[in-house]
Image (cartoon, rainbow, N blue to C red; front, side, top):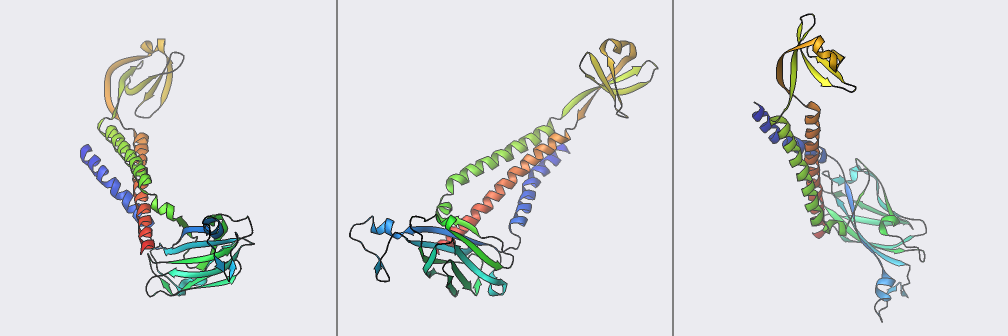
Amino acid sequence: MTIVMLFLAIIGLPLAVMSIVFALKYRNRSQLTYVDQGCLPLFESIVKTIEGIEILYKKKAIDPSLYFLTGSFANTGNLDIDRSTIYDPLSIDLLPAYKWLEARITKSPSGVNVNYKIRSDSTLEFKWDLLKTNEAFSFNALIKAPKGRMKSAEKLISFSHRITNLQGIRVESLSDLSRQSKNKIMSNRLAFTMIAAGLAGLLFLTLVPTKQVNYLLEDSSGKTFQASVEPRRNNLLRIETKHDRSSTEIKLEDFPSEYKISGLIIEEQKSIPAQIAVLSYTLAGGYFFVSSYLKRRKRRKLSQTMKT
C-alpha cells in the first residue's frame, strides 16, 4: 500500500500543480502589452554620426531635441478588446515639457482599423473597433524633448485608459523577447532540481520511516504501561506514557528503584511536519516550472506576433 500511495503521489503532484497553475493563468482576463522598440535620438544617431547627412522636419534642419519613438501594442490576454469595453481610449502620456509632434500607425492586423490622435502636447490616443487575442499594431512617433533632458522610454511615458477588466499595461522590450534561451536553461535546472529533491525526500520519508524504541515499564505499584524515555539535562530522564501523553521527570539514579523494564517495543514514527515540508518544496518546484513555461510561451507568442 505504501508503494502504491507513493506512486500515486508522484504521478498526481505534477498533474495537480499543472491544473492549478493553468487554471490561474488561463482564466478569462484582458491584457495589453506594450513592446518598446526603441527611442532614437535623430540628431545624435544619424546627423552627428554620419558626415554630410541632413534631416529636415517641416523644411528645417533637425536639432538634438527630436527623438523617434517606435512601439507596439499587443493583446496578450485571452479576451478580445472591442469598443464596447472601452470607456476611455488607450493613451500614452509624456512627462511635462515633452511634446508629441507627429505619429503614424505602421502596422496593424488585416481588417483592423486603428486610429490615433494627438489630443494634447503630452497625450497620444489610440482607438480601434476590435483587437483580438494575439493581434498587435505598431506605431512611430516624433517627440520633442527639452534640450539635454531626454529620459529613457520607460521613464518618459505612462499609460492611461478605462477598459473593462484591464488593469495595468505590461511593458516588454525587444531585447527581453530575444533574450530567453539562457534564462530558460537556468530556470529549468532550478525547477527540476527542486522537484527531484522534493520527490527524493518524499521517497526517503515514505520508504525509510523513523523508528522509535519504547519501553514496557512496571512501576512500584505493579502497573505496566508503554512509555518513551528521553535523557534530559542534569541527569534527568523524561518519561512519557503513550496512552495519555502524560510525562514526568526522574533522576537517573532513582530510575532503577522506581521502574522495572519488562520489555521493548519498536514502532515506526511518522514525521508529518517533515513530509509536509518536502511536499511543499515539491509543489513549489512544480509551480515554478509550469509558471516559467507559461511565461516563456507567452513571450514566444508575443515575439511571433511582432514578426507577423
